[in-house]
Image (cartoon, rainbow over all chains, first blue to last red; front, side, top):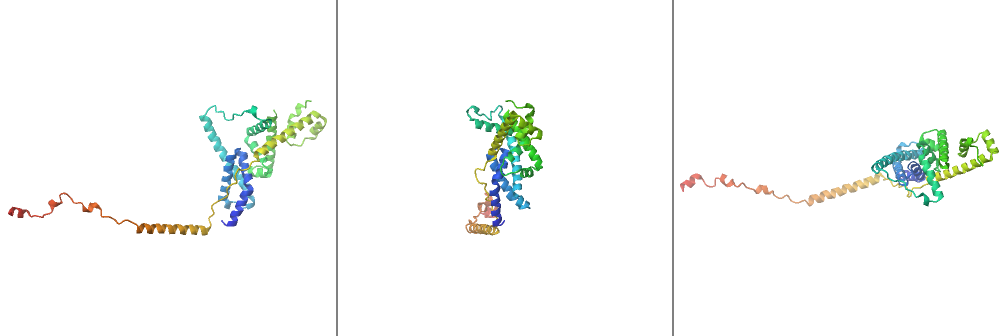
Length: 167
Length: 129
């Protein structure tokens, strides 16, 4: 690989690292895991760079890799958590002192909790669309679904969130 | 002021961004309670969207490392030559400094009965004495 190719790859990493991280974060909702996934994504992209015939698709390509890796890690995390929960019954995992938290923080917590409760397909679209750099077309490409489906899932997700948070 | 409960679902739809039908738009114009309720829900949706955006507006704490191994041919040649030279030096040093092979002790070992087998003095000679 030539020097200018390396410089080009590094530039692409810098340009896309935030988006790649945010996609991983949208799936995992955990900063440490999202960082690991972002790192793995670019390592894989570097390894498989010859497979990318159209350099203009780099952004969409790494977005897909990031989402796939994040989903893999999420599944692994769920398996680990189930094992841990099975070995520690009645564990109080989310002990939060609601009384001491300000109203805004309670609201934020309520919204996040409502998002967590959304069905996976709705939650994914909701969180990906909250990423500033991703429009509906990019999300549709990443998920392999029509743009109209992205819009309808987003509509349903926001409506469900409104109902959960408001009532 | 109580809004019209039968429009609950339509109010949600419009609050999350759908365009109201002409009929419902007319109702909103005529019913202050429903218009106020729509405004309240739309504000709540905006707040929810804001929380989701803020949640996702995260950056990695450290820059993603892009220091991948660079395999330039000249670097491979230099590293290969250096390794070959080091191996050659090790081999020569080892050869020069090797210990001389000492005679195994087993070669100087003699059977305790070896003398009996050696006919140093003839039996006949003994009798003649």
